[in-house]
Length: 81
Image 1 (spheres, rainbow, N blue to C red):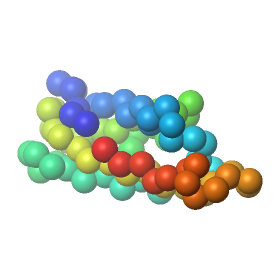
Image 2 (tube, rainbow, N blue to C red):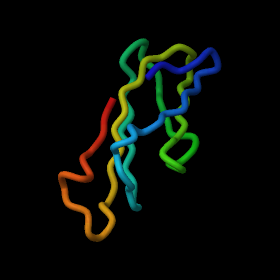
Image 3 (cartoon, one colour):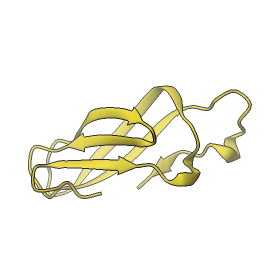
Image 4 (cartoon, helix red, strand yellow):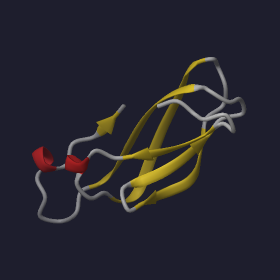
């Protein structure tokens, strides 16, 4: 995921990601150039927003949380991009 000219990006989870329940854990890693990525808007309706100190930064992300009761591990994998 690349941030825009302002250093922001909205991350959309894949359609097959399924629901996640709190507590959520966000893992953000700046790939190029080095910057400090942070979550600026928590997961809502399958999307969350990130920001970096510099514009046009490539950020790898992973989000994890609890599975809703009754969902198997196969139905709720951890997602990363």
